[in-house]
Length: 273
Image 1 (cartoon, rainbow, N blue to C red):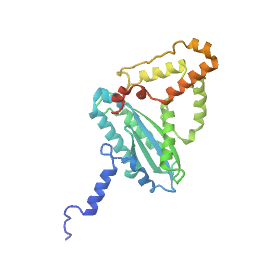
Image 2: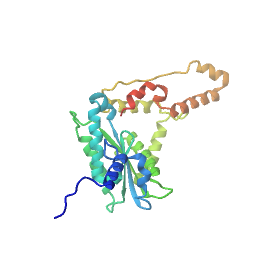
Image 3: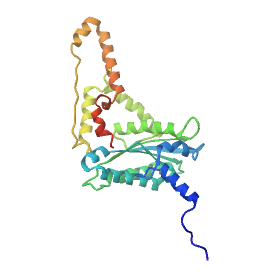
Image 4: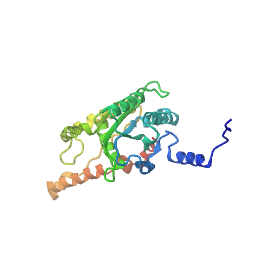
């Protein structure tokens, strides 16, 4: 008769402690700081990478508190681990996840899984009267090597995810890169030619979209307006080209900074989720 095992070995305890150190307790995913240690698992392999970001947590925090936000992140992380495996999902920031997986034989199997995940997260009520979340994804693929690291692929995915969010697409991937040209043309029409900032038509459309989203309806909104006084006199004294240059520099300075840089008190609102 086999003797019953008592307790854990030193190796098992060490492995458990290492697992706990590498993993995020809240979501069950790997901390992004450890990505380089896991990259060797994918070295010289063809992989698909997805950056998934969940929108609406700030709203939930303000309306429902930390408990519901913790519930969302817990479920969101553990479902991804269940879908793609323990060594394939990393937590990125407060509301993002990175998925790295070897290329599937069925071309769109990966996208199908992500779509299934998105549908679940955006339709689940999470102790709420109705769903409040949105999910946007950036997807890339390629062979992992010294030049094309997973970190580089993550940055590409973040850019695609941003395009998806700004244009209300669920995801953007390498197979629809032509979309950038179309979007670039559309954005040129919506930009002020002097500063590159949104023109008034674009600002009104963007503001309506932000104000009317489900997870911002109950939040307070602030519009900041400022004007350069005596600008006409500046033009007359220094010339119109100097005036244009001043406006260009002002636009460039505004694009360099977020609102938090100008108004530090906003960090109290945005830093939690």
